[in-house]
Image (tube, rainbow, N blue to C red; front, side, top):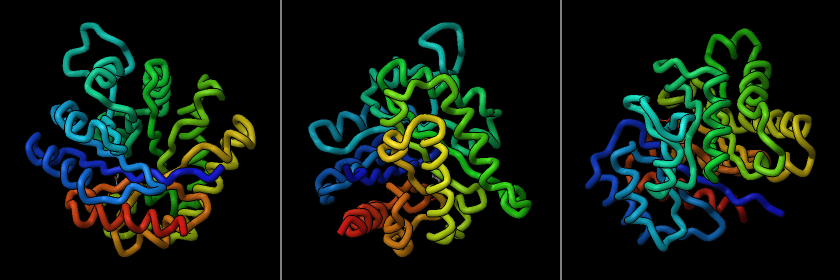
Length: 255
Ligand code: 13P
């Protein structure tokens, strides 16, 4: 069965509640969703309002992070229970900005992945090498370590439905996207790794996005690669026209 492309807008720390809601409404009304799953990832305060704005439409909502406990004395944190309550279906986990600025590690990523799955949410697990690691020829080793750690103790039955986002750190926000064939090679490696960790059937089912300077101009060539099942879009997801053009490229890549 063909994998449905998943195009997600990671707004990072951008957009007020009214801006986020207005964007969501425009996407719901203006986009052809045939064969594409569209996900909006607002900051925490806008999650509930955006979920309400897209309710009844095929658009899904994701949080950008989560904590692994259900509740308790963890000032400033947000639990999977709260994210479900707010209307989320997905949760981005292990984004490189969390790893770089907020002390996220392979171990905390794993705890978060297991926590959201316990509550019926779907993790979008971010992995990717830094520039120095790429230059040292360590790309595959880094990605293997990150994916293996993220899925430690995750059962096959739920792993198949999760999403992995390959985001080379040097491509994020730099305007320098990975060459489509290089991204394809890493995504293929990740799929083969999932096959080794679980089974070929799970490898065939799991969706693996690419992220890092995706634009309307380069989307079709990236999304046309056999092992790239969607995009996690930062900068170009902040404007409706650009994000809609990337969604269109995803539906065309299916033809
Ligand atoms: P840019 O699209 O701005 O490079 O960001 C990618 C990203 O980090 C998505 O999570």
